[in-house]
Image 1 (cartoon, helix red, strand yellow):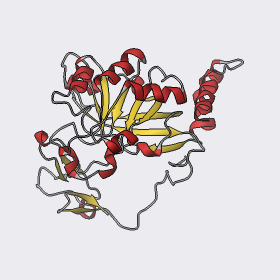
Image 2: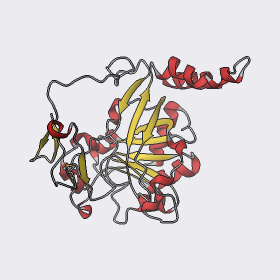
Image 3: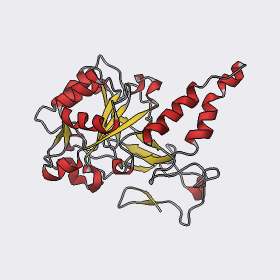
Length: 302
């Protein structure tokens, strides 16, 4: 059913128009109305707060109210009509992220140099949850990939492959950053996915690709021009085949990591997620409680 949904999308996009170029130009709008408007959207992204797990070598990030440089006082809704936030981020390797290859090799693209074609791709989710339950340090293998293909068919070229381990269920416990062993992706599996299946990139729930002493998987990927996603969430709420993934990230010049947002676009009959029209969007709903600054937590809360 999921594969048929994906093929339906492609048929709409490829279907020719009988006459004018203006008719041809409406195909994407037709696809939105017929497919994407009815799809269900699932967020695969962790919320960034100062206390989320991060490698100890990067230190602690903090944030605070933005201040007027002339007075040194924070802007407030009551006196200035607005508020803003000042972020003191210890690293760009934080939370759900997209690693560009320049993170390990300066001759390859940084985050601002990634092409816009990354925006929407077929999404493959390969689960190793059963293996991890008996071995917390289990890594995805080529056999796991081939087993997925026996069920769903060949992994689409140019797709994004997310590896589900359920490691992120304990998020945002900061101790996750120091918990070993953790589930990973083997070097053989990474080479197979890129060299044999020509995927765009893979993603995983932990903050590193694998638990090897020299991070061999991450080293091979980034030193050879490949990208990867880390800290991905909610993979238990998306289908293993048939969905798409939309992605966005800030365009920091020379950035070596990307605070990323990944959204799964699932078939309209999928049991999780939300569809267009199910929640208020414009205008957005007014909350019962206002945001306020919490000094102890170092962020705005309701």
